[in-house]
Image (tube, rainbow, N blue to C red; front, side, top):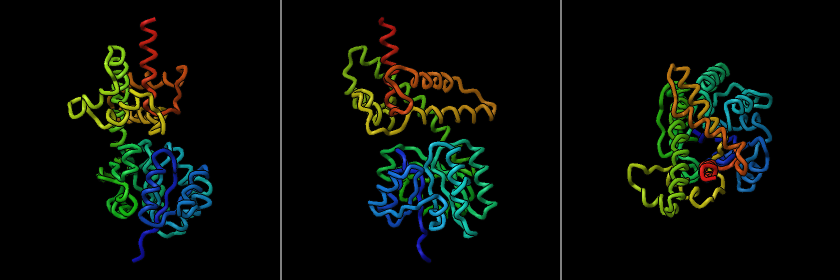
Amino acid sequence: MRPARLGFIGLGDLGLPMARRLLAQGPLTVWNRTSDKALAMGADGAQVAPSAAALAVDCDIIGLCLTSHDAVEAVAFGISGIFDGCDGRRRVIVDFSTGAPDRAHEFAQRAMALGCGWVDAPVSGGVPAAQSGKLIVFAGGEVDDVAQAHPLIAPLAARITHMGPSGAGQTTKLCNQMIVACNMLVIAETIAAARRAGVDVERLPDALRGGFADSQPFQIFGPRMAAHAFTPRLGAVSLMEKDLKLAREMAHKAGGDTPISELCAQLYARVGPEEGLSADGDIATVIGLFERLDAETRA
């Protein structure tokens, strides 16, 4: 049997290193809504498709890494989208984006009606894990579709867990994001408090390494917060805010309450309007919010 032909759509902060790893493994066709990053990958040896539909003609397994489920719907089901290029031959679409579980289930049903498989496979680990091929993948979908998607997912992942039917991967990712979103704010608050108390905050991540307060986000973003080193961007504030909103909606639909996440959402919402801060900035820039609050307290 010939190897599965792989395609990838969405070359943002996370998608670009994922696509580069796939290209290092073998032939890859790419498309991006803005062309510059796709053309750069073309210079590195990728086949650049003129549209999502054209990419689908050439590929058996297609990865998506986009900013929202609305973007996924447009790229997959819109004009010149993936399913405009499907010709009856079965394909599997693997959606690495983070979105609402009910939308993932809807997309899977629509794909099935068109003779294709759909796996919601959001990831955790961020840009460093994408670069090293050590993402943690939460998969939702049919068992056979998850298995068929293996050639695309395996080069990117340290672990793949099939969580259940379509939507289960997104539900798991939103649980992950509740913890991460709250953790990021606590890390920022702690570093701001430690700096105010006279501690050399650049030594803090190493000092706490291996203890109960340690975490991968602390080791990755703590030094960036301490040094005010926010480039290259490893994930935008606006995307974390979006994910936290989806997580709260998921919990509320299930009849639960999320008081800690509600408080965190209020703090994230303050980042954009605050002078000198931007919702498009790296997630580590939330340290600026707490530093400004400290300055207001002292004033």
